[in-house]
Length: 230
Length: 314
Image (cartoon, rainbow over all chains, first blue to last red; front, side):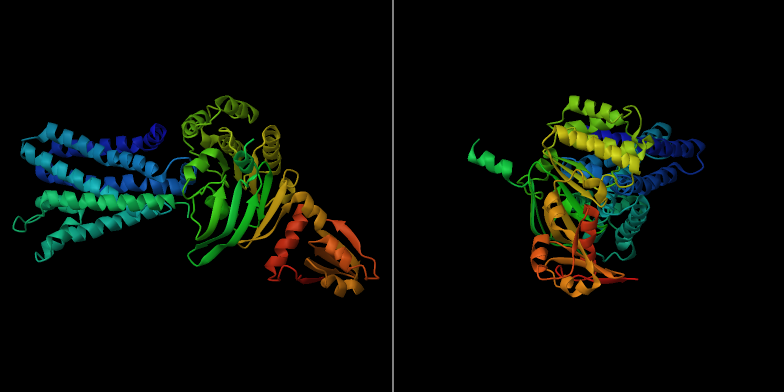
């Protein structure tokens, strides 16, 4: 297990550094120059974080190894695909969460309680991070059998757009059942982007539904990886 | 030695019974039966696309058969894949290793997965293969990469080594060196080797037994010496064409000028059948390459095993 973590860390750590530097720099430059209102700037940083980081992380784990041809070397070791996927998932979650935390620290340090309430800023980052983490699981599972990063990125983008439609269904038609919105990780940020007249799904309900979906998707993904040489 | 231990020692290291596998509508394996005795170097031959790699992936539990039974070292690859991979050395076709790792790092990465890893032996192999331990894998030549992969397949002292066309992409000198390294290893250990290849002249000197796979079916499995003794080419005047075409175990017939040549799978039966033939019939030995061609071309021409196609050459 330690060697698997060592391998994934060596392969992926540059993405963590790159993502953290870019997102933190964006927050720093935006909030320092004050070209936009603090709340708008933080929303932009969060939007970029939860839309780009899951794509970057998910496509670089399994599809990249498939296109490089190294997946077979990994799968033919005496280790279960479930364990391989567990390590990849943990590293992927770190790749997504790390840059969001870096951007949050910079934002709080520079503009906490300046125009935007500190607690509101932290909540926005926290909800965006939950969105990003859930999106990562969705994207990682659904792109696990694709043979290249490019094709995986295209599908991940499609998944993002589809989930955005699902999350916004109630904004278009408030009669749509709440459970539909809860199916999308983007519902975590409903409060931030939606009209307050349309009630957001309860946070705990979204967390519960997304955890359930993540468990199902992850199990399916580990089975797909077991038959990955097909 | 107890009865159980004796049975284990003599039971096949690989056994396939009626194995079938399809990818979507394409049936790749169509009822494969084969049995590999322990301690042998077993050549698994077939043209590209015959189903060799699919079979090997099933042996390691990387693919699930649609039907049939697979046993490796007496274990089921679907249930005991990890145990099999611990006890088997596997060298994939055109192996791709982690390019960013140095050779030494790759060995350190792989070692903990194998309880039987022999570090001294790994060091000896690295010296023998002249591997640069500080060089990144991506900067190695093709020949060096294949040797690294061979080292990884052998360093845990496996009971069975599965090699999937390991010399693919190597130049002739590198192929010779690779086989020399392999033979050196085999001479030192009584390990079973399952060697898939389509370069028959190279595998011929090392193979104890041969199985030929064609379009998803085993067309022949036999010890190499027996195959060489049984499969012969017969050359006779053109007037004997009808007699040759009626021979039992006929694999191929071709007419060349005023002569007819036939390849038979059972020379003893053919001799008996030709006792009454008044024309002179000359017997010729075949190498593995020619034997393979006779079996596979007969299959490709859609002729049943005992029927040959007639090729007329001006």
